[in-house]
Image 1 (cartoon, rainbow, N blue to C red):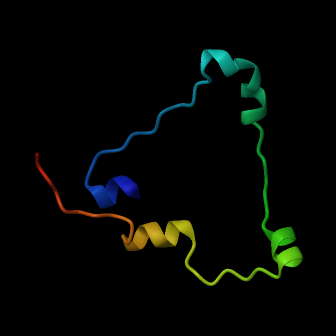
Image 2: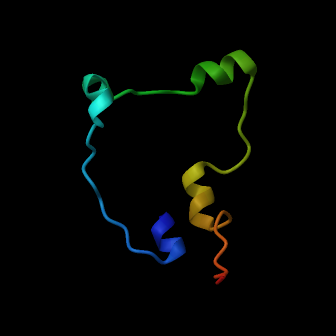
Amino acid sequence: MIGRHLDVPVASVAPRPCGHVTWLSPFMDLDALVSNTLTRELLDWRPTHPGLLDDLDKGHCFDTRVTTT
């Protein structure tokens, strides 16, 4: 999505742990399901703005002007 808005090619790259955090890689491979339900309940939070993917898709975050030095 970001590459499309910036008109640059993108490629999928397999993740690799860095040498100094190799011991952490098994934890990073776990599916960590998260939810904002508890936050909504505790803080009475009701988001009103678009979600991240919606916002990116609308292109509000991209300045397409090209500058040269």
